[in-house]
Image (tube, rainbow, N blue to C red; front, side, top):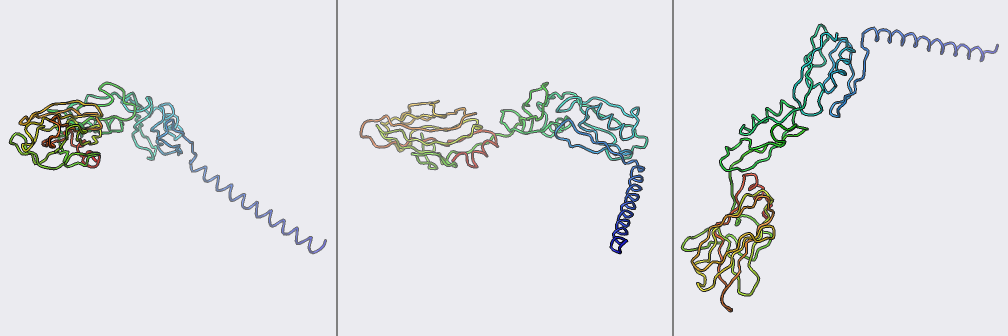
Length: 331
């Protein structure tokens, strides 16, 4: 046998010995690892909000999101006697018949633990009308509901109390619950907002029947010409428009004016006023998107422009609706 052949056989022998040695070490390691009782079982949650979790023997697993049957199986796989597992039903948002609470919490040693599971039943909207927002939030949180707040103004309602809910009382809560909460009345002068279009002057003083209005919109329509007007965006949540209409005390007493309030392109109020007339108006606007104030001259041909005054023109509504308009929807 040549020297090269002998060396090759020695090398092969060494390699075989090394592989065998590693196999023995690995086998011993696996034996010890399995002997530590760390076998695991993968649990797939039936709902999307939960992720698969490994159940470790000797530790209480997280069974929230499983059906009761699946939860008991996972607990048994962890080494818990099923006789130590009890359950009760509680109203909870989402799919019924799922574990939504467990005691003790997951991760604790099994030992001789008694396991209590809370299993969901359909959650119905409780009667929260008149409750404070904080009380209503707490009641819905115990049901697992996501909560949104819609602020509204309602005459006579106490600020911060629940006016109504969505879904209504007694109806199932599928996922999210909306609380319609009362807030105080607020207002803003139109003269403080930027109009979309304007052929009238805003932010001037007007005097009608001897009363001066520091905040006023003054239009000067001419006979035979298009009405003078000013248009504002509302946003759909403003409750009403209020103003005092009349001819400026410095106007031609022989030229009447036709005032119009146009909402979403349709006239909702039209009045002919003579010199010396004064007319307070209030126009509902809830759900409306656009407000236009117009003034047309009805005088004798060749008469001079006449000052038509919208005194203290204001938008009235909930604080949040007025804030929304003030922050940009008015311009």
